[in-house]
Amino acid sequence: MTADISAPSFTRVATGTRDKCFQVWDFDSSTCEIKAVFSRRHGPERDIVPKALVFDKNPTKDVYVFGLYDGGLYKCSGSDGMVISREQLGPQIGNAAMDEERSLIVIDNVASGFDIYGLEQSAKGAKFKFVRMLEVGKPSKTYAKSVVFANASQAVIAGSDHGKVYIFDRKSGRVLKKITHSKSGGVETIAVHDDTDGSVLIASASVRDNFGFAPSPIKLWRWTPKRHEAMANALRWNVGFVLEWTFKMIVMFAAVAFAAEHLWKIHDKRFNDTEQPVLHLPHLNDHDIQDYIRWREQIKSSLDRHVQTMHFASRHESATVLKDNIPPGQIDRLKAIDIIQSEEGIGYAHESSLSTIKIDLEKDHQDL
Image 1 (spheres, rainbow, N blue to C red):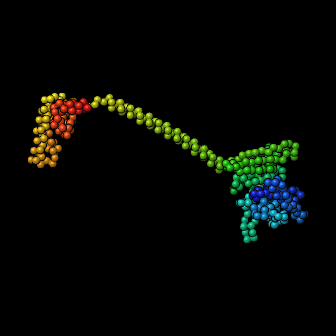
Image 2 (image 1 turned 120 degrees about the vertical axis):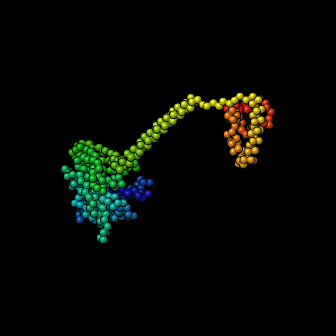
Image 3 (image 1 turned 60 degrees about the vertical axis):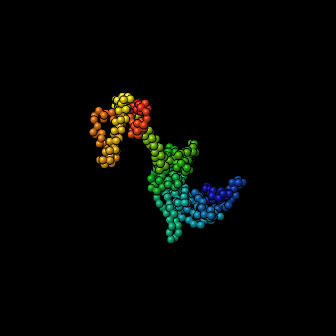
């Protein structure tokens, strides 16, 4: 049995029976009514026992019929079931699956495994050509086994007569995985569903052991292809690596911050413990201030005279020459006074009273 659900208003269903009859039906999902489109039974001249059916995707909804005993692939009309074309695929066909988008067919050859065919264009038209065989070993019992495409037709999943489900790589024919369904019976029925996360859900079933004398459950399996498994592992590894790297960076920055803070405390302690130089200024009384004002007036007149007579570029240059010739005792006092007051401050003090000069000089002394 097969179904086509491409039409929005109804579903087309095809069924085949061992009496060489296959029928097509239309099911209306809105009214839940089913209506027969046609029923076709081929005569003795065509030994067509429908083992597998596939709808064509063309507008007329033609049907591919795989013959069980004659090994033929028939394309029948979707309107009346008449044979349009025939191809010989093998001596017998135990079961079959088709991927129309990729023009691929896989059949159970009932002998040693499963055969893959690909559609090939030629001058005589399009025909299916043998590609490779997928082997499961010599059968101990001969009966039809289910086979399907999975993982976007990158894999072929098939049953066997010895209780194992085989997962093949379609392109190389290599066995990717074996699943033990039964230890005594075979695996005749398989259905698959490609999940959105890249995994494949597999349902397997078997005829009753000893032809009906023992129960046979339907088993469900989930298979994750290596490509998706590798991507999932890579994602998990990348997340773990980022978390580990982030943790290491946090620890490193914390260690650097701790070391910097510790070194700064040591430096600050040493700086505070170091004896700072103290500036000792001479005590200034009224007599000192009067001497200084008088001496300062002499210096100013000398500067002006040196600038005029010795052609110095500035008063600062002349003052430098004069300071070199001041007696040692006056150099100390000049340095003390120069540290406390600038040139402008001294000029202002000269114009003020002696008490004002003393207060200003003592205040600057305290600030230092």
